[in-house]
Image (tube, rainbow, N blue to C red; front, side, top):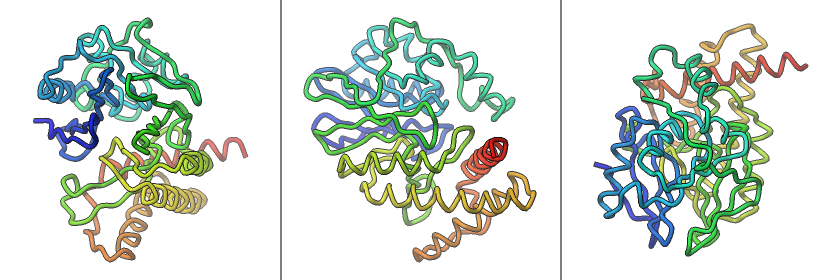
Length: 313
């Protein structure tokens, strides 16, 4: 089941059950004049998209737009599989992302370097989308979905090919990974929720994070709709993302200067997160197994950031 939830009059959210996990990745669907899906997840999430559409008496053929915030596989890896069924849909992408939807060869090669032999089992088949179905949106451009216009904003920090979608009608932004990850109770099993940044390979840029937070804050949205996972009050998302990104940068600078590798950064991330949560009155296990995948990816992303920075210094 998709856990379909109605958030606003025509806006729905549902769980993509990424890698079989509850509360990991969400997609959003506007069931208005022009049916618009935001995020596809990996190809392994396709059945959950189809189930959610069916529960609203829709099929992929009814989709007018499919928007992906960026082309990391847990956000857009399934776009090609969906395009086989949603032949009338226009797939909307960042200028740097569109070419990877049309020809995912480099995307597959890059992901294989991160995930190795596990890539296919984690994300499924990554297929191309016909070029005529792909629409690029530049900074400030819009699409009209019938009862509102959605505005696209270039938002680096997590990835150079990332945009955020602003819906002024609901005072909300669909943030992808640009405003962090909301760790929700169903995913962690803890009795509280919080936001931390995602610094996975290969484009983490703390200055980009800060500029993105400023840009979105100036829009005065009330709600941030994360892909991971669900809505946050806007200020909570800003604070968790920006404070976390600066803390992650500081600790990776220190560990890298000491000559340690990504595993050393990972250990420091664990220490920081436990201390941060303790300062908020929350006690968690030392190993943080609930966040193990993110801890490894964030540490590797920080390592790439340090190596890139030192190459250019």
